[in-house]
Image (cartoon, rainbow, N blue to C red; front, side, top):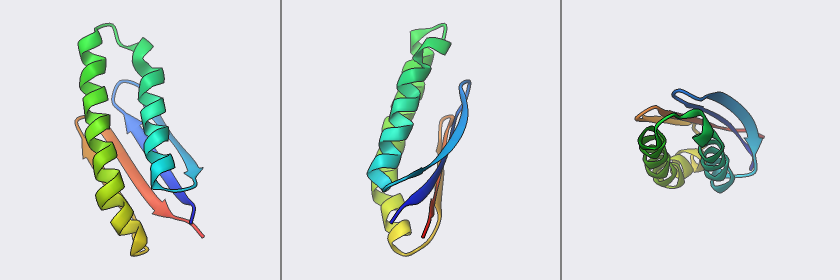
Length: 89
């Protein structure tokens, strides 16, 4: 089952894309925050965002995966990282 991923990173921007599964969605958000490193003046700001993405990834792979298995949308926000997953047919 494919799904639609919307995400935003405070201070960076937002995006959306169709992904294969929850693991691919987690990778897409992780790649996005890695690319965003250059927009932060202080490394500590980026590390805070990076930590939030790490926590979000855990929730996506647990709560998000369970919600999608039930055919439901799922979303969460953690310290400037917002993610929404929607099942697609």
